[in-house]
Image 1 (cartoon, rainbow, N blue to C red):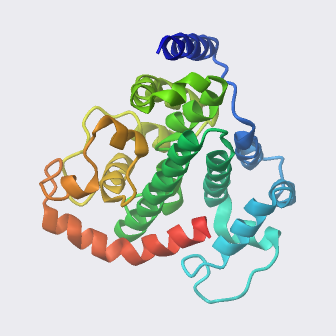
Image 2: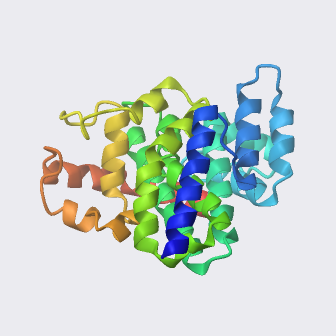
Length: 286
């Protein structure tokens, strides 16, 4: 127990220092996501420059081509086989989202601790679930751009991902997962805000993570923050840290009126968007 407290204190001080200095030490698995993001934002970069980075990552290359051939993005069925054409088809917003999904999936497989690896895998599955619902809801409702909504959904657990990745340097933390969950709960929000700033995400995405009320109160969802909220409720895969902390997740929430949302209206939206959600989930996970 003493080791846990000592390592948690050391980890806290390290994170606090990095936040104060404005420099977070990112896991190497996120490097490609950042490179693609910066190239996509640079007007001097070409599509070939971006495709070259994608081609250097075999898993990402395969998933980019798979996504480009998904029915959602390729309704006429013209087979796409090159990375260049695939990047052009899915667009840079979806590419950034997919690059992060691949990085997060690799992170979930790399941790030396089996318990933490399971948590990281659960985080990845939850974030992809939320992102796919975000895409499907926004595509159906046409209130925000689906690609933007999907990117916001993928970032929903980013602070927790970061802390899990860095926790490998503090092995005592894995010995008490309940206390580690409390540690993550304390630091995930400030870390997530710092990461979102580093990624220089669009203002619309940043605003979706900066709201005081959990839901705007109107129906149908009127903005990205609302889409993100209902996607979290809709997700079939629970966040593993919520489970460790005893936070209610989907089955219990959907038995009641959530944030003033009428259950029958919510169920109707789920039914209308489910096929799009499943197609996008398959495209990202395949």
